[in-house]
Amino acid sequence: MTQNVNKIKMLSLLLPLPLKAITCNMAMRAAEASSNTAELIEGIVSRIKESVQLVAKTNNDFAEVADSTSKVSVLMKEVSNATVQQSDGIAQINKALLEMDTMVQNIAASAEESASASGQMSAQTDQMKEVVDDMSIMIYGQTASSDRQSPSGNRPKNRDQMALLQ
Image 1 (tube, rainbow, N blue to C red):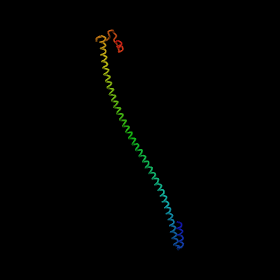
Image 2 (cartoon, helix red, strand yellow):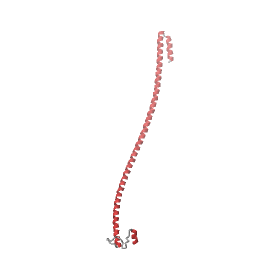
Image 3 (spheres, helix red, strand yellow):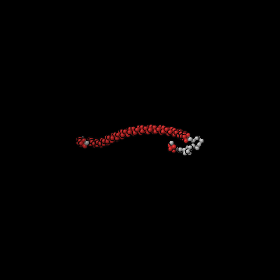
Image 4 (tube, helix red, strand yellow):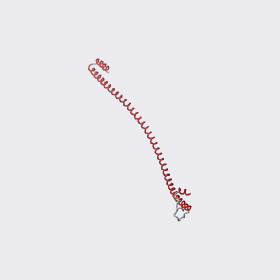
């Protein structure tokens, strides 16, 4: 740029004075405009470099966001799978509880039946005792109107005593 100004100044020496002033003035303006243009170009280049850096940083940030989104997607799938497994586990627990409830009801019904059978057996036992008592009276010679003792007055009270009499 300075060389151009110097060339213009040399050429202006050959020109008449008013023309020299105009040429010199134009050369100064051109040099100033050239300097301003160079500054503007340097500013634009600097801004372009900053913009390139911002674009690169933005691309990196977007890549990180995409990576994070991918990781979140994987985690959501894992949570979904865990939820399905948990749901299956709960269903199995519910099934087991229903089976246990059915078993408890069956056991309760069996217990009622056993209690009823026990009552019947108790009644039958009482009847058998009466039959045994009646047979004992017949064996030992007592009549129905007697005080239910053996002829010797020692009626057996239990099986052991009866076994001894035999």
